[in-house]
Image (cartoon, rainbow, N blue to C red):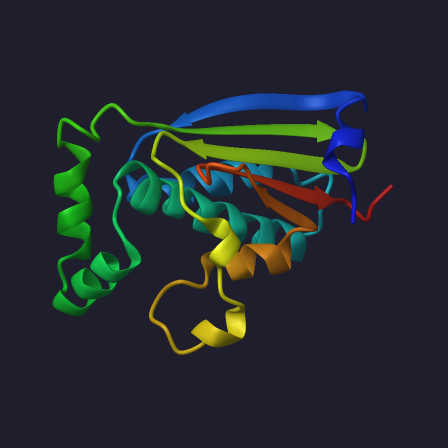
Length: 171
C-alpha cells in the first residue's frame, strides 16, 4: 500500500479543484469527462473502474453528506419510488441549498490522488460492514466497490472527506 503522505513531495503533473452541485444526475457526465483526462495514465478498464468509484463517492457525498439522507430513508424511498423526488426536494431546503461537494485531484508521478469533501456532518466510517454482508441489498455497496477499484481509500476523522489513491501500472 502506498503512503499518500510520501506522495505529497512528488512532482505535480496536473491538479484541479471542481465544485459539484447537489444534483446526482449531473455526476455521471462530469465523471466521464474528468476520467477522460487520465487516458494517458490508465487503460480503458482502469478508467472505467475509476469512473465507477468516483461516481459512487460523489453520490454518497451528495445523498448522505450534503442532503443528509440516511441509509434507512434511502431504502424506504427506493421501495416507494420517491427517491429522486426527495433528493430534488432536499436540494432546495434552506439547510442544504448552499452545500457543495469539492473534488480535488492531483497527478504526481504515477499516482492519481482524488479527494471528495462534502459540507455535511460526516459519518462513522469505522463501522462499515464488509461487502459480503451487503450482497443482497439494493444499495450500500459503493464504498466496498470503491475500495476494490482503488489502491487506497481513506476517510478523514469526521467522515465528510474521502481520499482515493490509484497508482498507474504504465511507465
